[in-house]
Length: 121
Image (spheres, rainbow, N blue to C red):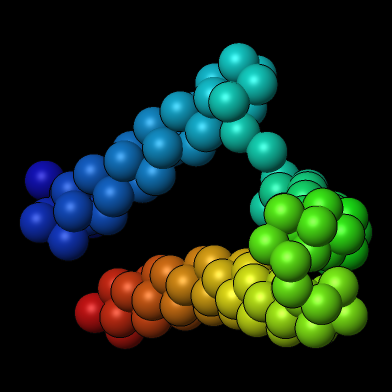
């Protein structure tokens, strides 16, 4: 038997077959419209976050007058209070979206390290 048919060859062939099956699975999921390009997902998240942030700011302004009338509080003080709360929520939203990006980046980095480890072995 040729030396190429040894354990190392079989391991490499098994790994190649595993990667081929994974690629076929990804192609299938893409054709079934179950996958989206990462850039498209990130753009959609950014757009959604911005819309939510902007809507939150507008709603706080709209709520100031009726809340002042209902509670008897000064409209200006109430508007300032609501603006502060809106700003806090907007910052939390931005941090949350940044956290998603950071966690995805960490997963990517781990995947690259695993691939480097396998290549070195």
